[in-house]
Length: 114
Image (cartoon, helix red, strand yellow):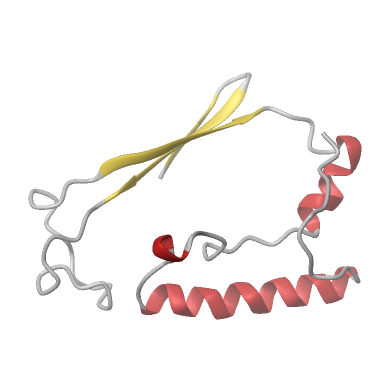
C-alpha cells in the first residue's frame, strides 16, 4: 500500500498478488515469500480521500467511536490465513475496549454529518 498527500486529497494505491500455485504460494505460512516473477503485484484500487478538517462537525468523535475491520467486506473477499484470523480477534477486542471506555454502543453509523 502506498499513500501520498497533496493539498486537496490523500491517495492510497492498493495492490494484490494472485495465488497461482497453492504448494509454492501457501496462504497459511506467512514465512514463504511468493515469487513476484510468477505472481506480480497488480493494482486493485486507488482510494482518494478529500482533505477535511477532522475537528469540524463532530468528526473527531465519530472517528474515536468507529471501528475498523478488514472483515467488513463481501464473503468472497474475506481476509485469508492465520494472521488474519488473529487480527480478527485482536481488532474485535480493541473495538470492544474502546467502546466500553467511551461508553458508546457498537453500531454502524446511521448518518455522517458531512
